[in-house]
Image (cartoon, rainbow, N blue to C red):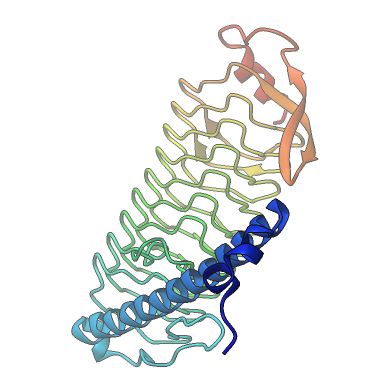
Length: 310
């Protein structure tokens, strides 16, 4: 029988060089790390399965069970429940956690989604599970979305016509091609949002936040911005008609090529300075050609500057 050198042949073991001993310890450590990694992977897999089962159970207990929903259809690649093109018209989903669901093309017309979550389902030791719902081309017409968290969600081509988005969070969401016609967006957070090619016509955006948002080229006819925060927003090429900016803050906004084709209310509007041009730096629009070049506008100067666009 071959004996272990470290136990059966002390003399030979003693002759091991320091480098050999370090190498042996390193191999032992690597083997242990591999074992721990494998065990951790298995634990995470069990937690994912438990999370998925709990998620499906919650869906079955909710009013969503009354609507066509494929709750047990899970993508093998992403392990995400699939409700693509689901019909949730007039459903009561207030406060529901819909994170991780595939909801592309789903119909939430008239649904109550007040306080619902779409991007925070991962609650098991920060597991690496996709948690942001997919909501492209979704219909939210006439829906109640008060206080919902849609931050960083892909909402391209979504329809929010006449929806109530009071105090909702859409910061960093992708809203290209979305429709907000006649929507209530009071206090809504549009920070760092790309609103290019969206329809905000006749929307109520009072007290909404558009910091660093891109509204370039939009027709904003009839939209109200009373008390809105438009600091550093891109308003280049925007068309204004029958708007109300009473008490709004446009400090740092880019106003290149602004089109004012009708009466606009500017009472108590705030603006320390603005920009007449812009550059795109790392995907973000940065104003150039500051006005005034230094300091701030004197009382009445900003409104006088706006009159040059009429």
